[in-house]
Length: 191
Image 1 (tube, rainbow, N blue to C red):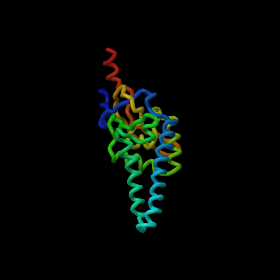
Image 2 (cartoon, one colour):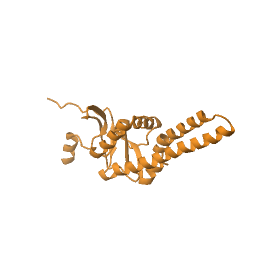
Image 3 (cartoon, one colour):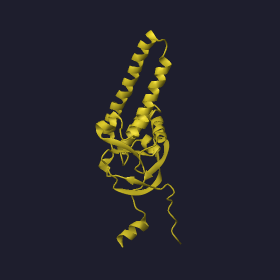
Image 4 (cartoon, one colour):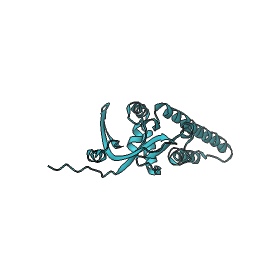
């Protein structure tokens, strides 16, 4: 009986040393700093709106739209760029895809959308980092991204597979890089 061929349709990705992944404490710092920037943006928008309404008239819809665009840019395009957000810069982190590339704006928008699901999801997301092998959040897992130290270099490549979990009544599935070599490849290395 011949062995069943391995499914490699999802391609390969990179992985890092366990200490290169950003854990819960640094993620909390990132969130506090970045949420402070977002809150400051909202406050500035409100302040400008108040004074503009005294002189020009009702500009609130335009300032609201501008503020929303700025928050979206900050949490997606800037976060994924080499510039990074203030929170990512403060802890020395960067965000990459499972293949080690800079995430697209679409992928970051998906990630940000998952982050906006609500307080219960955020608490579940934080809890997830405490027992995830690579200290990643669920929104990172679902978006196919990974938060690592800015100076981190991949230590290897592996096949990307679908990982499935059932936790707290949820059935979860996401892509993950396998750190384990296929048996045939491991046997070749030992001979």
